Amino acid sequence: MSATQRQLPGLYEVATGHEFVSPVEHLALLNWAEGQFSGGHLLANRSGPSRYYRSYKDNETVVPDLFWHVRRRAVSMFSITDYEDEPEYKCFLGCNTEGGFVQRHTDSSPPDKHHVRLNIMLSKPIGGGVPVIDGKPVQVEERDLWCFYPSVMPHESTPVTGKRKRFVLSIGILVPKSAPAEAAQN
Image 1 (tube, rainbow, N blue to C red):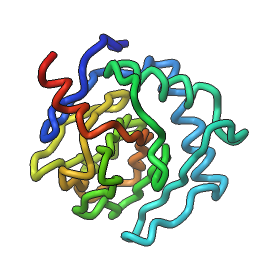
Image 2: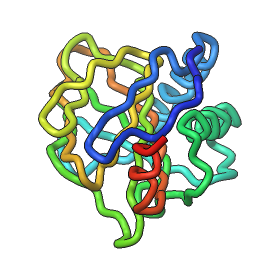
Image 3: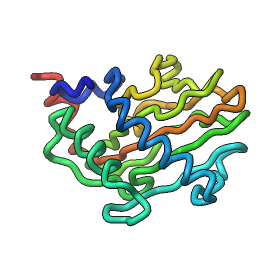
Image 4: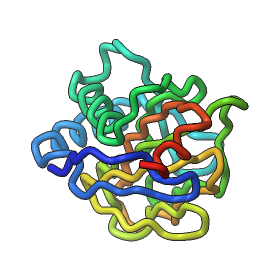
């Protein structure tokens, strides 16, 4: 597992972490995600067809401790110490089934903060499901992490093809506006 310390990416950059979660963590999180989907715990996303999600807050009993452990590790991987939880989307599990995709958009953030997303690909579909950030495809495999600023970089994903679902664990935090500049100086 690659959890080497690094800085946040620049404001218009994407950082990736290959095999961020171990095979054992991956299997546990994927089984949990499948259970959330098959148990009807994910909500239909009104932004498009074949899309489902659920946001989670700290200490929810439906969330395994591993989820929060991976979240803490992802945040610390980028040497982030000054942050707060992103209040609107929070941490969430996203699922796209056949035909589902994330429409091109940017996310909001308060005027004095930058919204940071740290996403982990839990299940990659047979085709499609590729994250596209600022018009560029980001090549990630299952267990990989990608980090970017969704409030300044338009992002989307390609439509899922085939029966295999696209599950993404998404971690949202807010950092001071100065964080990208500080990372660039180090």
